[in-house]
Length: 130
Image (tube, rainbow, N blue to C red; front, side):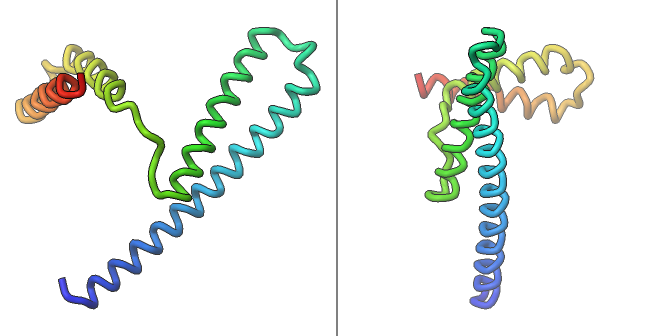
């Protein structure tokens, strides 16, 4: 790749990052607005609200806080929060095992082989993390 192509690629990467951060900021503002509206509603009406609805609203608020923190980390530092790799691997293993159980008979040989290979790799990664 010559220097001119590298410069163009660098500009494209910067433009893409700028657009992605603009979308993230818009999402952050949107989540924050919903968070603030819900918080006000909880402050005004929590005494008359159904306890189940109140618990649900508090759970949603916690999820919004986590999403806002994650977006702030991405915008400020360029990285996501630490992800629980072990839990992701377990979830993907379970999902893919179920998928294979239900669909293996309809899958072509190449896709089936690659999926089983990926499952074996996930198991190795999980063993390594444990």
